[in-house]
Length: 282
Image (tube, rainbow, N blue to C red; front, side, top):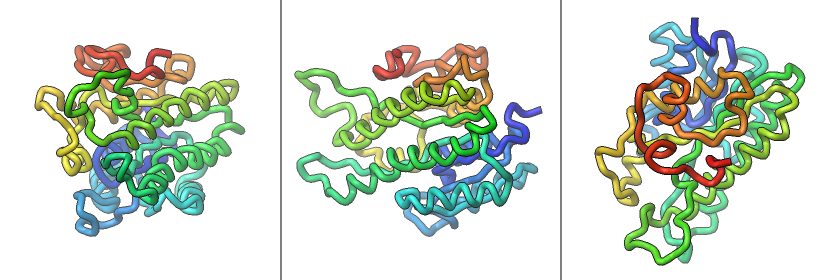
């Protein structure tokens, strides 16, 4: 029996990459999955992946899911996601805030509209969706919110600095993920009396998603640093199903978490070979 059997799970950014992999894995674990993204059909955007593809993959192996197209920069779209989830499956048990929209550019030249729109998806939407999820979770005194972060949340520390930087022109993305990790721990503390888990999760190593490949020019990537694509979904399912006291408030890394819980023999990367962000240490 799957660890998420019968639970209603909303997964954002489910058209491709980590979000699509989490949606497929949750469905395999018995969840009723609400797949949320902007891209509905293959070929409509420059990156591969679409909700129709994710939904087809899930249904092909007997899973249950619905697709909800939504631009999460719009608060009304966030509300529509939960209306669709309720209509399809009922109250939401698990929320995975994975959707991301970003650009890499020097701050001196960064377009203001792009900065604001990115924050709307990467920071404001997790707040709005969590607020909606809590309306389902608090009365039932159960639920889980998993916020997908990144090693980019680790700041570069004090100078002098190497040239070029480790993540070139990544101030926006790193700032957003650091904010998401602080939001994670603050919300975890607030809702702890209601038995609700809130945790942050990053890959221990780089996952070769379509977005990462598209932005590969800003990464100094080594093939030894690539993470298997099944590890983030497994770690997300663990956070969504483990007892609250064991995982809530954690800002953790995929391989380190799976090793700790005996689901992976050995790992590499953040949380194992390298320390995580400041929030991961708290």
